[in-house]
Length: 386
Image 1 (spheres, rainbow, N blue to C red):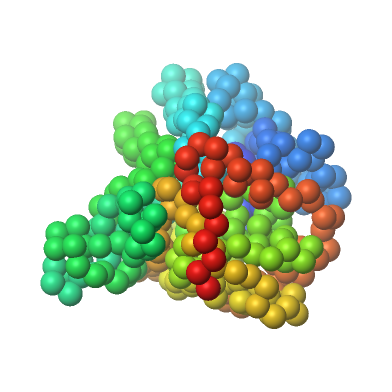
Image 2 (image 1 turned 180 degrees about the vertical axis):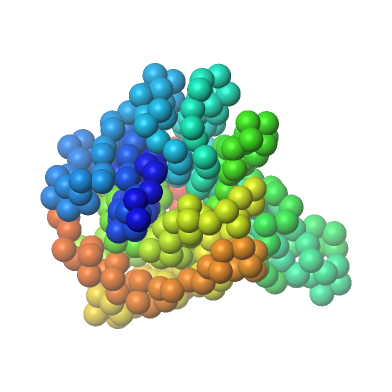
């Protein structure tokens, strides 16, 4: 069955390519819109060997979502928009404020401005947002019940008080799955721009009568994620360092946790929303529903590389980092029947196999860390605690 054309912004990224691969298998035409940012794709992008780009249903347009003229070139050709294009480094966003705002907020603003002022036949917009909009997210206090702690202060972190406290009684709290109805408390510029994207789309889509779906992605990982970008993609960064024998430095006490979801599952959630109207108007978490500590991840990756404990816990921290992240998947299960299919263990094996087959990229981690130290977003000293 032949379907209409889908525009995927940020389409040359690993999530966009995965979505496109699924769509063309099901008869969709796809237009990949990307600026090929050197931070992600390198100074000379190496995509020529990818069979996806040789598919007759796939087109590529190099453009910038900040430019109205580029939107005007692609939107008349398509019926659906999947908006992935975004600057994504949480720490980097704290000192690249203009760039993150111009791309993340300005990009979706240009899309919506076109739709408000030009004739079009757009039938649905899907936005990839982030779990970062929750800040710390949901916790449970024995005394106060469900609570939403604020960002951890520099004083807490410098004292090694890693776990958030109850905002009401200052008691101990335990992380629980965060639902879409949670209090929103972005703790970084990146998170603030993602929440702004959500608000703009929510308001404009209603006014324009265009169905919209917002996905709050957890930590997406998998084959194809950029090995050049030191600002995002924790699992890819760690795997790349282990491949060249580098000792991993784990922040805080190594027990910060995240909900890691494989790119196949994240992409499948988007394609499910394109095939169905059941989620129209909804905001949905996309994750695995499983929280895994950074130390556990490091141990699993070491196993994949055949290494013994090749990491150390430094006690370093970054201002703006959240302690725990775990998605409540009840709503996406009810609306789309979504269930994650790739286990963390299987996903890590696939990631490591892919990393081993890639050219070795220059390690930019130290440069990125130095930038944080110079701007006072990370302590300059390293304290080994385990």
